[in-house]
Image 1: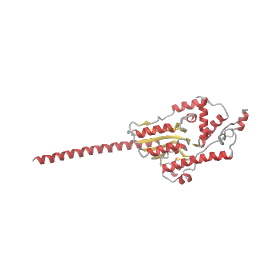
Image 2 (image 1 turned 30 degrees about the horizontal axis):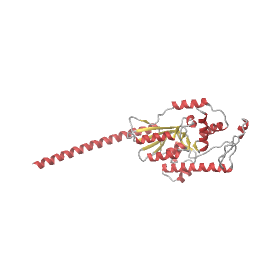
Image 3 (image 1 turned 180 degrees about the vertical axis):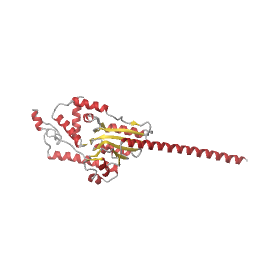
Length: 320
């Protein structure tokens, strides 16, 4: 992976708020801090993560041949487009998910779309747009989002508009909140013998890039971006779960991740079941729908035959 790829990831990560769980925050913060301090990237760790991602179960857009359902996996950190962080987490992108969702909606063979979600969240960029895609799609086809085993932060944001949200018994759901990070690396730069000078044009262009602490004004601006992203997050959840925004802000875990039972009590999920349970229900539903369609076809044929017989009888009587 080229050097510019790392720097692009660093720039993107610092410019956009994140909707992630606390454990994944530590991973992201550590990676960014190392890049800011110009420490070397662990290429072996990245390569191992990419291999693990390639070997991970789940095939994007898999359609169960015996049913009318398609399964779309949502694994790892989610970003608008693929980058270093999504690679290292075995993650996906909103760009990819949007393409898969649109294809499933357009496929006449698919009547239900199941998202298999195991994600700690991701970047706020792209979450609002994808949440709207899901909300619009559920007006056309039934969409079920299954937390198996984590549906947190941006992942929940993205799935809030599903027709139904299901949590597996051991899953964790929620973490409705947004954050951004800034590390004061003054001491690290000093140890490396680096004295950073920032030259910029534009009143606020150089904010925070000198490696030191943020000014009060700069911190207030970053907080305003976080508050704006959080407002969009709350609005998406409120629309998807059909509750007022005030209920999302005052409940729904208030930034905490909840276990399956607590998530159901807080109205984050509709029921507790495994992915196999959900797909098994789809199997049964599809079979019942097919049977009903067949019965309707037979009834229509029978009705048509009776009408033709009646027409023939009327014609014979007229000739007599």
